[in-house]
Image (cartoon, rainbow, N blue to C red; front, side, top):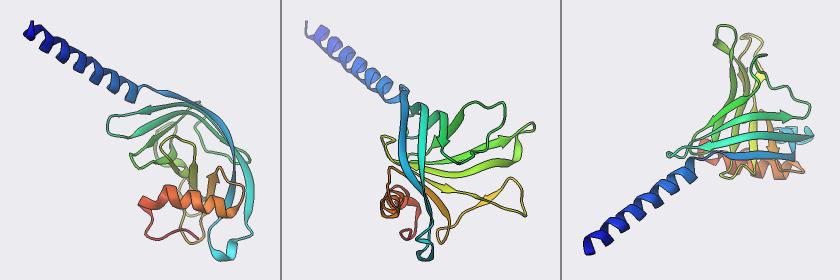
Length: 181
């Protein structure tokens, strides 16, 4: 009788662990639209601000390591995210700290230069997003550049530059030597 209780307890424990693992890695649906702003960093660029709407639709898959993979569409009003014609879905692999690269391999060879838009940063439940927008590099087509002094940013949800800077600084804190201005 005591032996059976131990086996039942062990079986229940294993079922709970398996259930937890499945819950953690099961993809969740992501479907929202949020208002944000596109702005340029730097004190001298305080007036460069444009309202944008970001629409996100797809699924988010978590791994046991904490990394996340988003598969779906990301539309930013007035922005053109470079994609290959045959690619219908965007795939962003986020590291455990919430950083993911917005880029596509360059068809038909799928070798560099990549079609790049920037880096994206999300919070744990994907309710906040910040994007560093790579500006075109005229000397290296397909490549882009960004810097923390005067780079272009998109952040949401935000109604003004102060909100956008706050969100960007929070999401990018693990990757910045000093706060963005």
